[in-house]
Figure (cartoon, rainbow, N blue to C red):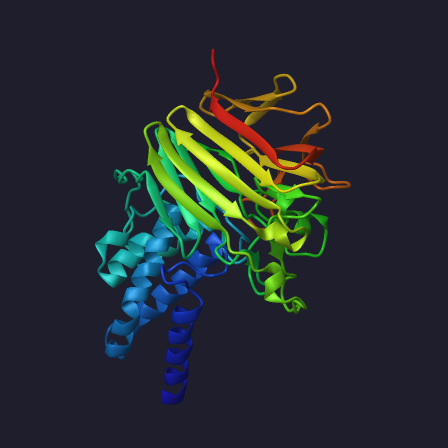
Length: 393
């Protein structure tokens, strides 16, 4: 029916233009929802078969290439970075073959990755027997898109993934989380520090925990996150943009000893003029150093959160250090200076009170993991650093 065909084309064109950022990443602040929407566009393109509306699809093809390239960015390393909400519709592994399908459907080799061996969405389009044993191209040292806020830094065995929400807040319609200034860290292909994910969208403590700052590798000042998160699904934000819209900034540079990323956030201006936070990552082959600067004045409650993958063994090594054991036998150490009037909390699978120590790689799953919290009242300005490196034997 021509009426429905025209309406469908309008919806597809509108979505490609407004739901995705210029670089091709979905605006939802969710890596999993990006895969789902990219899949839908590739299916529509494939169904058209180039036999009808060729001019229309040629006009959208460049956007689909960008969407597929963004999917490849998420899927290029061995660990899928679960940023924002995870959809209950499909397991995350089901769409790992999107780059391979996109390359075949769009005739664009630059977005391709070897398809998985496991049966998944790609099995509808590609011949069986494809092997993931094909050598993957090495990850570039620096990869990122400022308009979308996704960055990856690689040095030696270390891989650092950062999402810096370019809007400086999470809109009411978004599947995003309060993860500003947060990050994920891999070592030798193993996830070490992770985004805790979100097990449920329900209005309960576990659902709120998954979306809040306390389940991400970031920090809070006076109990508040670096950015404002509007209520989800239909709640109208009764605030002016001047109150909550503080876009963050990032600067990345190469140095003799590695890579440096500097993240700057002014979101705390909404609670007190003069409070500004900066987080610097120094990534070298010997490890990662994190430097936090909280500028301003007065005395404030400061909380820093770090969350370890469930496969990482964590043990205390005195007041200022943790020992980390990876599945392959590697040993790391996590170091940070603790002030006498600060408290250290190490929790795993805490269900009562302030929920803490849960990892949700898929919707509906809640796996206990070790979470680290440093809390105390400190005077501003404050300088603090953390180091993650191979353990000295």
